[in-house]
Image (cartoon, rainbow, N blue to C red):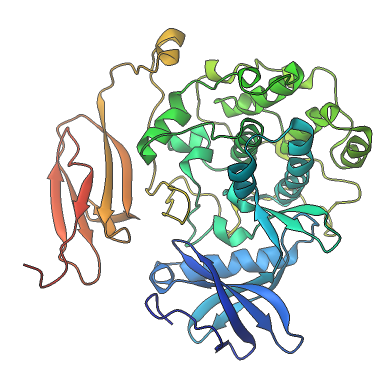
Amino acid sequence: MNTTAPLQTGSTFAGRYDIVARLGEGASSVVYVALMRPMMRRVALKVLRLETAAHPGAVDAFLRAGRLQGEVDHLHLVSMVDVGIADGVPFLAREMLDGETLSARIDRDGPIPPPTALALWLPIASAVAMLHDRGVVYGDLEPSSILLARQATGHIVPKLLDLGAASVAGRSTVAPHYLAPELAAGGATCDARSDQWALAVVFWEALAGRRLFAGAHPADVVNAVLRGPIPPLHRLVAAVDPRLEASLGRALQRDPSRRFGSVGAFARSLLPFVDDAVRARWAAVFGEPIAGEALATPSSPSGTRWRRPSSVDATMVARDSGPLRSSLPRRRRPPWRLAGGRPPRRRWVVPMAVATVLLVGVGVVAAMSGGGEASREAGTVAPRDTYSVALRTEPIHARIDLDGEYVSAGVLLREFPRDGRSHTLRVYAPGYEPQMLTFANVGPGELVTLAPLGAR
């Protein structure tokens, strides 16, 4: 298999998967609908692209993520049924479910009423809390990673999609719109608080019917995450409860130490805003709401500066008990790791994917400016002794080396000290003439287009 000759409808893969149709594709993988022999069970078969598999450690990380998902048991996490390598191609097979993503629901219907949004969001929070209880950071939370599975009865069951999306080659993937500020700023490790931020952004988007952070280019989105004001939700959503907005505001603190102590605590603070039956169900998982918990720290998210977080302490372990509890025994919390099984890396590579503009780069470094509240609300940034490089490539899969070291593919977003030092970029891809660019104190431009070999 290669990227120009994908699996064909009607063919058989690995001796047991009859390919029915191509379901979709992303930057690192292609997904097919397949029938798994001998029971002819319908599954979603994900195969890793060969160019992705060529990255050191990519195959091991991909398979580790699949095996990890096969170990856990949670109603609101999609079940993994098979993982392995066949014909030299790494693959995962998970349960095939009918339905749509939360992203598609928002695109179609716009804002979701708070009780309905919470009924969809709380199950996902329970799945994330369970992963945190095992020391695993999902690292790729966004509306498109939440499936609203439609059961034969017509009921909707929210499910968190496969962990394989969160770790390929030990690198975490995340759309910049949902990237926690401490990760966008660089130098911080991914932990449960960054998942909490992403869950809050997803919930805000479901309520408002639009993205919280937007921009024409990935660099604009990152800047909005780091510095942009967060619009008061009550101006966008009629009759939103101020206490709900306060809970959301705490989870959206740019300083991770000011957020809730766990995803479970965040979810618990939202239980007063659902009906009695839903509240009773989820109180068995997260505990009963604690009066004033959302106001334990300042709740104005736009007024908080980011600081590098301290190491995660025991309070970061979310409570997960009751009917949806994992069937696995509790363990002492291991060091936080991404879904692929490696300890979280300080450098993030975020590849491009279908249907959303994804940030690509290693170590997005954008320090918070020293300007006051007025300048931040006005969208201004205090002068800094740094300059930004925001560069994309054509073709999008072109690799980028910085000063002799591979850093990303497709897009480079990085901030450099304005110290006069010269840097060299090498952009290259199979079948294209490579390009070398040298720059100092100012970026080399926004687009590098490679010419096909032999082109005149």
